[in-house]
Amino acid sequence: MNFHLRMTEEQAAAHAKRVNRNSRVVRVLDGKVASPVVAPRQRAPDKPVAVKKAVPKPKKAQTKVLPADHGKALNFQLRAVGISGFLPEVLFAQHIGRRWRFDLASRLDMVAVEIEGGIWTRGRHTRGDGYLKDMEKYNAATVMGWRLIRVTPQQVDSGEALKLIQSALDSLI
Image (cartoon, rainbow, N blue to C red):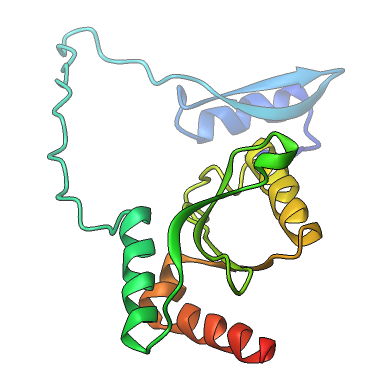
């Protein structure tokens, strides 16, 4: 509660009596109430203080598909529609001293796929430092002539990533 009241000290005291007495303490500056400050509630001395023990929550079973599994799933989808030549974890940019990898890539067609995980959980790809490093990698790949397709795991699951790759390959013909 961050509001300013225009009350004198007497009005603030009368107001404090009307409200639950120990629930609030008001700060008074230059004869005016500045803002309410929440004070801790006082316990009656005859009542024992209850101590709650921390009970650990049961762990949920992991049902998420791991990023490597999304790469395998996308590679399976590509082969199912007759597109071959895509390999997982393809190294590139060794000639400039970097050991960057694409999640999936076809060296023959110069088409690379990056599956961007952790976009909703503040993963590496969305935090500042990781984002800048990804930009450096993607820009270098583009300068080298690679066509880069960035997809999310949800796009792999829905088949949208497969359609993007198919349209990128069709535009090469």
